[in-house]
Image 1 (cartoon, rainbow, N blue to C red):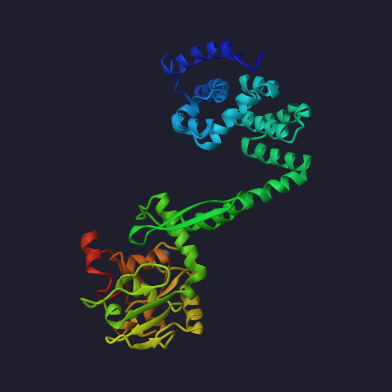
Image 2: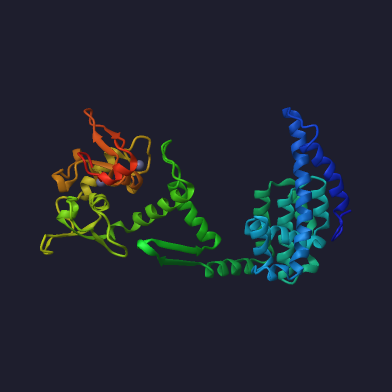
Length: 401
Ligand SMILES: [Zn+2]
Ligand SMILES: [Zn+2]
């Protein structure tokens, strides 16, 4: 029987034998053999987690983490044991609540439930203690469900239980979480923007639901890492709602990318390049203010060069999605790209327009790619013909963009 502390020692002794067999001894490779060995190895790992939890809870009682300048035991565990905050919290909860969940620990030692189940039960014991009803905490019902449910389903069950036990408190915790929302935007060197924040579960879920589909890889040539893809997705999301408010002030020289031309001014950020300006100017939702050589305003707002609403509807109906080969970003997320830019005499009519999503629009204007008309009224792409850096230095114009 497992006790509150020091009690897993005999189990750990047995564990050493198993671990030795798995790691050093007769390693078995058949599928049927692995199907027996893997759950047993998992049970061994769980017992080690239990031992870790007991030791971590004991450690948290000391002031060693404080002496080592950590903010909390969880902070110390994160840094020194390379755990996430959630994993460190789980281990502390198990270690500190072991006396409240002896049957569950026993069930885990016997391989009936996993460590994650045990951690959820321990967290429930913790929550119960916080509401001052610890004496009533009964692990039996939870343990019965843990035996039957996968970890994900059991987590949901625990939330339902907590809600059923005290709906008012559950709702007030949600309110606290919303009150804890914060987002910091800090301008850095070179116009970079640092973002730091935290969201409550509902807000976080809403953000991830919006970002994750936009952050998927786009085809085999997409080598962006996850962080870059999420950042691109965030910008895409912001542009989706805000593009109509974007105001750009530029000169004709900049738009034509002539040597010596100044950059273009935008609200809320540093000046942007002529290449980026041309990409933005492709889209009808940009309000542009064109300045002549003497800084006189020569063109304000939308003109016949921009895509009218009926033409945009016709374009959406024709292309339906981004026309980059293999891309399926829907029309409403895509920009109307002028195959021959209007500043170079390209007409704003359907034959010269193509829908491109933000990523692929960027690749055409700034990434050195070209999208060109084929004889059968389709489109094809031409990769940068020089190396990447040379292609970027060359700019996006050429014939097509
Ligand atoms: Zn364009
Ligand atoms: Zn695309």
